[in-house]
Length: 454
Image (tube, rainbow, N blue to C red):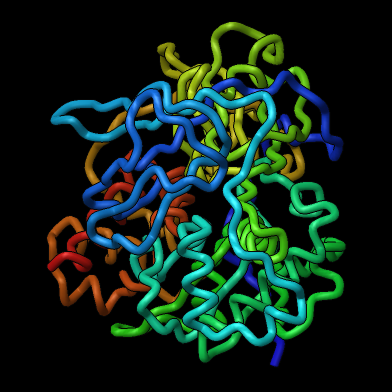
């Protein structure tokens, strides 16, 4: 039965620079990269190509020796121009110089009626060979799913509540057929339900309007209402020993397109956001695109930061860096590498803060959009227990005690306090409002790895 879940805890970070709902043409990127660091939990990446090789879109170029059946495919056709390694030969990037016309590997095509007769084994095999399997993420741990598991359910968050998040109605415009086909295939991968979770407070996007065969739930409230981990917690919590899978709506479309068209299509629409963007709009590109063409001549100053993703969970990249595999947004922010003497003591309403502290008066203007730079306005210090973490975590867990259990490496406490239910993004707001400036998301990942590999 469909559910309506109203959340009160959380915090919407209102920033300037939301993308207008229009898609503009930019010069196409020339190089693209697959970054193993995008795939959390990848242990032993093995490259299957060498510099100078030519590939097509969908050609396998990488796999993890810990999960060899899952292939990571080239997003575009072209030449492998660099296999970049860091310290201790850690694999950082596999760069591709793209062809002007993209050519595709040919995979088996199915008609919509053929999809109905596919077995689970045939569906899994098609997704693995077609390179789209990495779109499926396992909970707990937030890693690429193991094809041999039988998840108790599959969860899809149909909206994003992060700061300046893109609108899926724009990202997936005209993809209704592939979205439904993707859902039909995903239904074969679980004996449980497919949960499609939508925003109660927004108009239903056309891509979701006619979906069939899934349970549609509605969520209402501030961020992190759009986090699939929060949604799982309120619909069907994960207990020790259980496995659930999640997938982004873009991944569902990619699955559907693979089966219906027989190609690995890594094209995507992304949002260019942030107060430093001259044109905050949507743009067409491909997974792993170099962002230089989207940034050059599109910023208000020369001193800015590019974030692949959103300001809470995104990754800082160079001005000619590469879009993250799972990202549908880049954010351009003013750099905050300056010292502000006694800045915390000046009464002002121009600094966004969750805390109703004397001097920080932003709470008096709840609808105002702010320009934030990257200055942390402080440094790491003693863990102050203020009780505010619970106010932005709409889950039945105690984040402060969980974080302290992780730092103490207390395995029993971690399990009892809900380590199986969270990944980094679920406590990212805690890091934003933390007066002690602790790397909360890094602490969460440390705890997950302690549990996963112990």
